[in-house]
Amino acid sequence: MTKEELKIKIAELLPAATLDETGEWLNVSVDPNDWLLLAQQLRTDPTLFFDYLFCLTCIDWKTHLTMVYHLSSTKHRHNIVIKSKLDRNKPEIETVSAIWRTAGFHEREVYEMFGVNFLNHPDLRLLILPDGWEGKNPLRKDFEDTVNMIKL
Amino acid sequence: MYRQTDIISDAQVSPQEGDLVINVGPQHPATHGVLHLVITLNGETIKKVEPHLGYIHRSIEKMCESLTYRQFIYVTSRMDYLSAHINNHACALCVEKGLQVEIPARAQVIRVLMDELTRIASHELWWGAMAMDLGAFTPFFHAFRERETINDIMEETCGARLTMNYMVPGGVMQDVHPNFQRRVKEFIQLYKRKIHEYDELVTGNIIFQNRMKGVGYLSPEDAVAYGCSGPVTRGSGVSSDIRKIYPYEIYDKLNFDEVLESGGDSFARYMIRIREMHESIKIIEQLIDNIPEGDFQAKTKAVLKLPKGEFYTRVETARGELGVYIVSEGGTTPYRIKFRSPGFSNLSVLDHIARGSKIGDLVAMMGTLDLVIPDIDR
View (cartoon, one colour):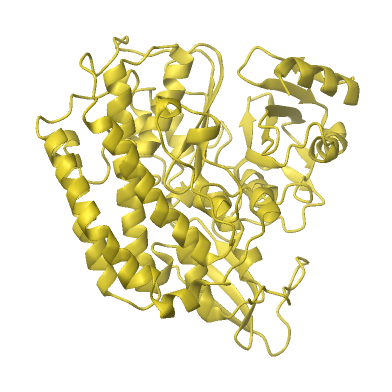
């Protein structure tokens, strides 16, 4: 599907979504509450068939967090970017690890680095940080580690 | 063929009475780095493999937020240290995408040549190490004989043998060494003379075949669902070569095949890498006599500023798909940078393919996933 066709299709599936096509791929901004349902449709709809989640990350914008999902289809070879704005003080979003298995690992990374709570995640534990890590999340913008961090 | 018929379902497995929980790593020769696996065993059968990461986590993503677009590329050589050129290449491509710079034809060809030489060097190290994991020491020396030749070529041109830092936004840092073409041709001759030894020593060896065939079966659907890329997915028959699907540089003009195997087991993944080396040699042969004359670097400003926006590039490293995601606020440093490393996703599948197998086969599975720990941790 081309960008235009994807745009029409997504607008049909979720009229509340905001679409942005200035970038290389179509950017879709969704409310965190709509995300799980849209994710299921993106994965199962035969014309969309986004079966490959190749990047899952988060951005700290100081006022809010943004989850970013890069999706690709191994059948149709089209790509899409889904974004979801989260409250910085209480970031919560549904996990998609049941839809794309790779999300299980990537969400654990985002959980410890940004403090995003993935609802219904089967195994939300620290992955990279040492056991018993307490305190702030390292990839947030206000993180300061006076002992180990070298300012460049 | 043994197909993991009694694989334990993916629910949370907690150790029960009579189960044995053992730690492999962080310092273990078979993990090739500081990977820590906590393995739950029932007898000799693996019930669960749980990777614990972070022993070499340097927070490269955070570091890059305070480095300029010229500086941050040097840090990325330390991610996947066996494909340093390709990491640098991905970052340079991403910055170029933001700046909208045209790369001179000479630089493009040099970049592709370096990428393919790196791919061969990486696969050779993997081959030697993999054979060593399975109990044979000799192949390691055979692999290093060829790999050292490539490192010598790199050293002449880039000044370094492992962390090359050769690709810069706009092209390559300097022109190739005058000896470059001659030495690459010598390497091709050496490779063609010696490569049959690889098959004689390992590929055709019945002990190795028995250790790899039917071990760690990964279905095509699972390979995609777990976000695997590179030889791991192609071993399951899923076409995933970024060089073919989303061509960058001059890959769309080159004549090479995407290597696919349908076995899905460790042996299929092994064969992919062996055959990929032949394809890389094919690419190098096409280009080595046809390096166009001209500049090796486009003219760029001394201080690079990317426009506000988001840029993503995908390249094919020796291990799979590397993604570089730059979020720019218009300044001289990235606001946020994310490296989608192939190893991280490839590792996540280890638990799935190992369940129900014997502990002795774990090394064969880890070996054919080709894990490079700094690439996983970043």
